[in-house]
Length: 296
Image 1 (tube, one colour):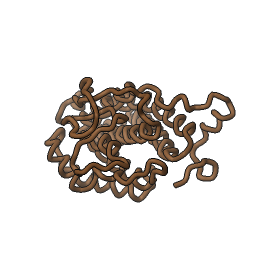
Image 2: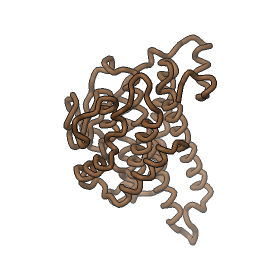
Image 3: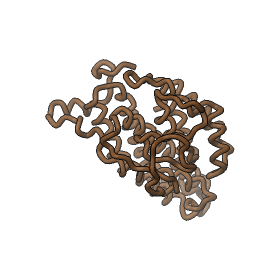
């Protein structure tokens, strides 16, 4: 569902640059390259009252490509911290209170206190949710969802590659009907994650109720399908998938770590969701430019 030009351009550009990177690799050197190429400053000019969709699309393209490649750079946290409030240097690793994950190395800018380490060994902070504006939380959540979407796409691609190349009894594993069915189920799960993420993005400049509902829905869907995608990909890949040498390992570490990060968020903005049946029913319709008060 990558339909926007800037999103596709950034996705392709970042994918090309990271193609030869090692995992975990030299994080500082990778960050230097990211800063030089302008990835860290994509959202510097974002307006809080009317966020430009093209800038958000570009940021989503970059974050998704990193997730798909299994590269653990603190790009999404820094993008949120710099959004509309650019820092004096382009290579600072920053963190906003809405972007609770920090990622190693510890951020250079931003108010935080390390609370622990996640599954991917990334330091994280926890702050009171009541201090976080809904729009900032939504932007941070969109980028977390995009990162999970990229990692899910990468994990499924690795699982598909393995069952296509692995031959048993003279045929690839992918020729077994049960394996083909499982690959189809993985595709459906990824498409669900892609759809709910896209619906949140479309509502970033809409009314609070529509945004909060889309956000709550996306969190719920992600919490259900992301662990299933990671688990199923490893089942198809076999024991080799858990080793450091396997490309799948770095994608699923991101998936599980990001999923855990989402569980620490609470229900920011959920109070804005209407409880009256008619109003609630209207929020379940997919975004439409003609029926939603969202300008693009």
